[in-house]
Amino acid sequence: MNILGFESSCDETGVALVQAEAVGVPRLRAQALHSQVAMHEAYGGVVPELASRDHIRRVLPLARQVLADAGATLADVDLIAYTRGPGLAGALLVGAGVAVSLGLALGRPTLGIHHLEGHLLSPFLADDDAPSFPFVALLVSGGHTQLMRVDGVGRYALLGETVDDAAGEAFDKSAKLLGLGYPGGPALARLAAFGNPKAFDLPRPLLHSGDLDFSFAGLKTAVMTRLQKLGPNVCEQARADLAASTQLAIVDVLTAKAVRALKDTGLTRLVVAGGVGANALLRETLDARAARLGARVHYPPPALCTDNGAMIALAAALRWQHGLPAADPAPPRFDVLPRWPLEAVSHS
Ligand code: ATP
Ligand code: MG
Ligand code: FE
Image (cartoon, rainbow, N blue to C red; front, side, top):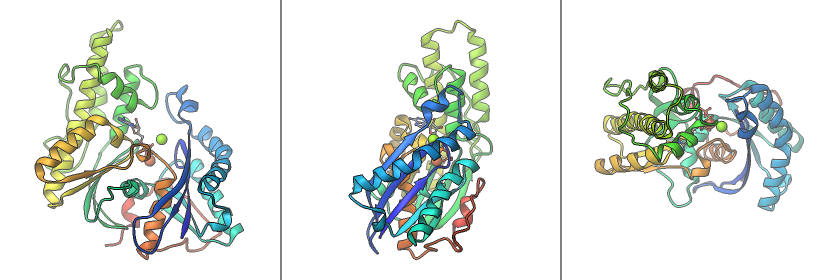
């Protein structure tokens, strides 16, 4: 079974070919990715219309490259998967349109995949370190911060989520205030390496709320007021200190809630997915805290933490293996779902 996957929900065009047998972890045969980060950088964030147009330009060349790299042709493709949502409507329509048209032309089924399902199953693409069910998933991306209980493929229960900004958004907005580039997470982490994380006492909202919800909007406001106090001629060291303090505040909250989720559920495996999962301090801290609990943390390969086509093809492969709806109900009609709760694809 060869699955060609398309991701185009935001500012990355991703295509990948995944091979799956009836049992066993599916294998990534090839993948290609084009990030639009440089294009959106000048605007300080993603411009939806520019994103859609760039997906159109990139998607077919990337698909050709993936097939060539895998030594395959379109005739080898058995199923075509695409990100159906959530994401930017225009951007989603590009991947969906290409996938469904290809399916129609080749006489192959298509399957619309939930973007977050892709993220949270992506650790299965780690060659030697695939997690086993059940596990707690900490999903920390640009648009989402959620803790899920995952009992199997398609069995997701929301344990808690952010009531305002996502963790990635907190990184991005704080980085912008600090005059760093977009996306802010990696830039802020680089600056933080030169700073003292104890220099500023920043809020850790909902840290002791007793539940598994998050709130990051107040942190961005706190960074702003600290910067105002420091004045326009703030020195490099103070900026680095503030970056380090911000990073530590975010990591502290994410770690505390993830540990609480492990304790509450009694599970011993934590899967971290989404772009913020690439953060080195988060990985170090989670590993250390989990070890004390006798728990293990699984991560996707760093390159697959942010959006990519491999996770979409993989999610389709795992759904097929588990006998879940293996194709869209009524092609060639298709829609995309810019807002789509993950629990909508979960069966009890
Ligand atoms: P969603 O999946 O919720 O729709 P998204 O796909 O845009 O959002 P991802 O691509 O998974 O999100 O992740 C992007 C986010 O990850 C950005 O906010 C970025 O700043 C953050 N990020 C990436 N690398 C790091 C890092 N090393 N440290 C902290 N944050 C990071
Ligand atoms: Mg992105
Ligand atoms: Fe994403």
